Image 1 (spheres, rainbow, N blue to C red):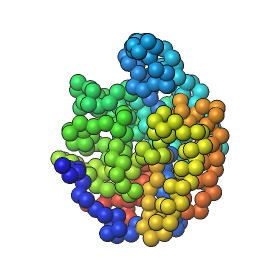
Image 2: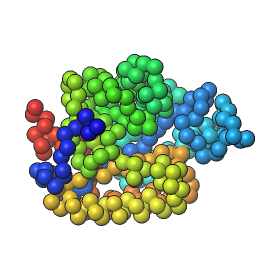
Image 3: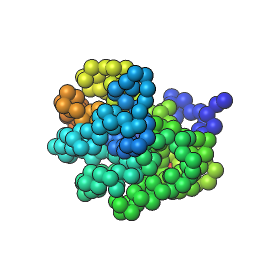
Length: 292
């Protein structure tokens, strides 16, 4: 079955896009801030179950993830603040209630918040998908004073109905479709919805949990990735996402490489650091989509 949500469009056949200031690549850094329910199986873990049996509560894996909220996030934020970079935070809505200081800091500094489910549970596992989406959006609006414009599904998982529900709920863009280097318009039953490029390749889950790479890998891979996009972006602008999680990128043995990556991006003359909404607004402006 071909892609039911988007027309096939070879990037070589498209009208060239231009970024402000002669930049070639728009880079956005996403920090996934998630809450894992203490009374349920963990979404993922670093420690395998003893004797081959899974237990609830899963204290070591819960604590491993919560380290990111207690310590790792604040390390990453210190780096980004030092370089005056505003990240985009994919936020489980429940974090507004359970870790309010984190959300307050993000809002105070003007970072963007994406909807990321209510807790870290894939939408196909929810009994009432639409209810979870609307509940998440409403809580984020109440606690931050802003209605989220974008959405990243927990685990990037969707049902056949997810995009239509999101469009009806007022979401403007999603990041689950990691199939392009530029934004594009998605097919929905009503309303308007766009895909903004996210990543599995430049994602610390893939690198450190799936591939078991050494700490420098995200920095080195991002540099190689950007070299290609920067060359291509000379004639047609590209978008590059970097996906991170505080319990992985915010640990002591990786944070130095995260700092070096941010420093590299800030010094690269072909890079324009943006948030997800800024990427969307730019795309709509240069393509005339915003006038429809």
